[in-house]
Image (cartoon, rainbow, N blue to C red; front, top):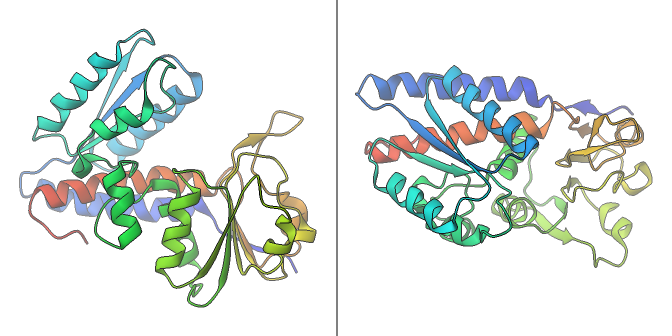
Length: 287
């Protein structure tokens, strides 16, 4: 068996097309969806990510601004800028690119963003909404993972799902989203005694720990759906995920590649969240 690829690039293109259509409908009502991105410091990876986010936004008709500040920016000034954006009615989404300089409290900064403009879905209010099944913004990476599973028509109800990783950004919200679809969910992490015993029982595996080859072929049940969230570099410096792709592909039923898998979908769901924020601000029920 050779697994079928879940093409994140192709699916993200579809999502962007849907966002573009909904954006035009909003603009016809005089509402221009706007995303404000803030980057503090000069982290090279962050610079690449923010540039992609701005380009994605403009390509779909959204307005996007990028404000860059030096790493020496006092935390109080960043909080003041976020407060101003919260009060700006023309801004629908606010994103503060992580990581922040060490002198800043990331959770404090995220908490300063209005939950209604927290299109990253990291605010505790949105995390709580996800927990209890209320409307809010879902974190973009697990949201994208769910869209990828949905795209292959895979029914999650009653299936065993294993999430490897317990971060607030991916692992925990991923588990909650799978649970909402009535999957039986196990969260594994660095203290899990026997990871293989769990993954071999899984119909769906989401690997999100940032560690190369954390999942190998002998740990996967034949036909399983494998979602690779990891972003690492191999010995040759090439981009790779958390999954031993070459071997796992020969066992799994479906698998996401790295690159070209979850990454493009993460960016696409940011656009979808921003558009939803603009629709809600305009008194419209999101599509």
